[in-house]
Length: 379
Image: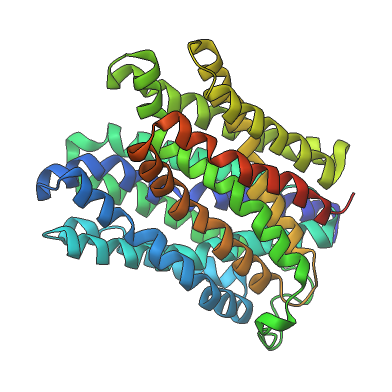
């Protein structure tokens, strides 16, 4: 692949990682409006919000087959407009059940785009010998933030119109970007590969997936419980406790933007051990009694520690063979994203029985397992 094409492909796929989640970010900004409009309790809203991950996870395998057949470039062109349409379904709902189904539809569509994004980025890393995956996921996090901010600022023109402006514009630019992506030799031509059976998949794929799973449990737990935990430890109001999520998310994004640089200098195993070690220190710092400074340090270390695992897992899964990248990535993501379903409820149940501090300690054994599993990566 020529250097000019490599640079073009890198810039465009990073742009797509930024553009695709803007519609999702716009929806996140509208959750309070939907909650108030439908008069949902917190528990009802929590149940409805599970619709997206519950649909996304099993759809990943189907998405891998479709993306392998049509190619990531065409997938962006066809599916980004569909995502724009689906993101309006929550505004048509009348209760918790219909909202659950609407978000399930959104999650199913997002699965196809997630596979397309990671498949193209993984193939580009292999074909051009570049390291981009971590930065790509940094742009994904940035896209969510920008989409949410833009929709919030446009709210006075009406929630539906605000979401349309963000989702429609990002989809239009995304379609152009997808069709402009350079073809990767042999990847968008010919019949799609025959799907692997579970017993034929590389054993390393499942070890990589378990490594990522334990870390995503930390990411899910911090996203849902960080503010609550800081409010308990700091004794501040909810308006101040939100700084916990800001610190965690900020260091999560920062870690992803420097992740490729760290990987080039430390190798896959080195950066995996370094970041998981930071995550262990971060969770441990959160549980130190009677010192609020350690809590803030803990959120920062946990963010940095959780930042690299998923993009590192995507690159490693894609590198296992040259035929089934999409299926390998989908399988890894299906297992890893389960951490967002397991982590937050686990923390809630343990906290109910004991305390949030004890509940957060339950994340450490999984991180220790992840640290041991870092041997699955190449040096």
